[in-house]
Structures are given as C-alpha cells and as structure tokens.
Image 1 (tube, rainbow, N blue to C red):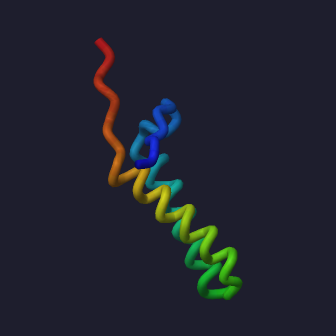
Image 2 (cartoon, rainbow, N blue to C red):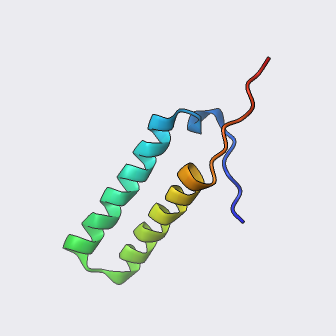
Length: 65
C-alpha cells in the first residue's frame, strides 16, 4: 500500500521511534490546546502514517556480506 522508506537514516530503531513520538506529541498538542480540526487531522494523519510505515510495515534490510 505505502512504500516503506529505504534510506539508511531510518534504519536505527531509536530514530523511527523518535519520529513517531514527536508526531504523537504534536497530535496530542493539537487536540488538547488548539482544537483546530484541520491541524488535528494533519498531525493525526502524519502520526498514523509514521506508525504504520516505521513500525508495522517496516522490514529490516538484508545484512550486507
């Protein structure tokens, strides 16, 4: 469905988790303090996309020999 990024920057787990955490915090901030539906949908969409791509659909590349 979505193409999983294959860039070496995303290979460490901590970077992928940091992206998910930041987008989750952004979404929570928009929900709690902004109340602007447009930004809630944008932030929530980014959070869900990052969650899917970086955790659910992620497959580690084969080890180089």
